[in-house]
Structure formats: structure tokens, C-alpha cells
Image (cartoon, rainbow, N blue to C red):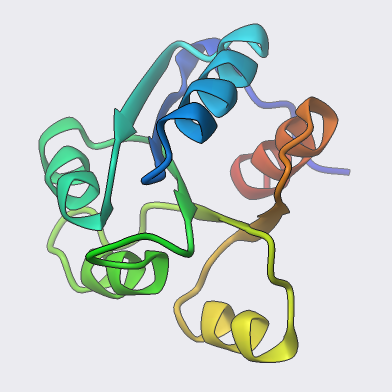
Length: 130
């Protein structure tokens, strides 16, 4: 069984190009008692936030423009000091090619859209709790 996660101590960055998705996920994270929830609208601003704010976890959509979620994670994995930041990918696609690309980039978990609070809590606990 995974260890308990202290949501109040977590700083989580949500990256999605759709504002309503960010808002929904942010509200769910706040309801779970997450200490700090940051937002970014694309991979570029997400990378700036990771370097500046050093979140404990990133929840990132796969399909974004101009930089998609995989491009963001590739850049993250090559960035000094933040390369090992855990990532949960938001996706409507869980096909084998998407999963294999995610494994290559050491993505901690997938979270299917539409996001549901129990699944969100479970994935965060899985990735952060060991």
C-alpha cells in the first residue's frame, strides 16, 4: 500500500491549454486540501513555472499547442535541477503508442479525461506516496 500523502504540503502545477479544464482540476486539488495550485496554459509557460516555482508535481495535458505534453516532459527531463519532477499526464487517449511514449519519458501516471476526484487523488497518491 502506498504511503499517505500530505496534500497540504504539496505544490502542484496544472498545465492545460483549456482554461475550463485547469479550473476544474484546480478546484478538485483544492478540495483535496492541496497547499498550492499553480496554473500554466501551455508547455512553454509550464516550463517557466517549473523552473521558477519548483512544484512537487506537474499535471499536464498531452494535447496542447504550441508545445504538447510530450514536448514539455522532454524539455523538463533535460532541465537542470527539476528533471526528476513527477508528472501525471491528462489524456483522452490511452492507446499503446501514447503509453509507450510516456514510459520513455518516465511519466508517473495517466489520468483519463474527464477527470474525476477519486481518480485524481488515487494517481497523486500513487505518484507521490511511493
